[in-house]
Image (cartoon, rainbow, N blue to C red):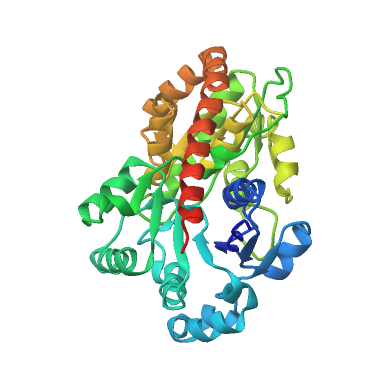
Length: 383
């Protein structure tokens, strides 16, 4: 008689940001296609089941307004909530969704404390395709103890994150270097013929001593340069259009409103919400994208559309480094002159870049699938 496959729960999912959708959907599809029973623990549960009624969502343990007002209560209530949740109780394996939330710019205990509870109840625990760091001293101590005692294995998606774990003296048999999980996604969509339209995603970033006014000026100069090269601009983001979530269309509108009229005539702010499939289809309208949101770039690349990255965190720079596209990644507060030189080079090399990513992305996808196979081997050896 064949051994019954363990039930898997992917936790800490946010389905309102198309970048996050790309991440959890990639892992869910990979495991589901291998025949595992997988559920997805999500924040914004009621909204999630309306947006994606065919996905097996369950309520995330932290999805209560009480924790927004009184976050210090969460560690004390998690064990009770865990026992009350049939989905968590009956799952043999808890996998932290891919992303970049192990960072001291966020409250990492809110995202990771559930693993201590899961391990107490003898669940197998994994975190898949995460960025790790930068971390302050307090978070370093917390994460090291958590990985050693409560997380069976962690996959990190860039070399910087791997170095953070090495500096914490995490045993090498506890982690593996992979790439961004969104590269597990494949697409049969075909980009339109040359349209002379480009999409730009923008976002605020209030950490790491970044200057928002310098960033707005940078975007303004990129828009002006693109328009002089006969491109039309549409501001579009993976994160927009919902009243109860971050809306990048707001800063896009600020930048648009400050443009001289002749550049406004060639620009437009798209402020409506797109589901993930709608968003992918929309990207095929453009010759290329400029992405401050990293997954604006990655979703474009998985659809064979060139992307120019504005890196607000180390994860953007790291991703374009391992893709061999670092010439087309700039800093959130990049010197304008340097940025325009790189951007001009990007525009001039569109054919070369398109040919490169057409060959590159399938190879990256194969590498990511091998890492999923490694995860599945870990799961199959579940005791």
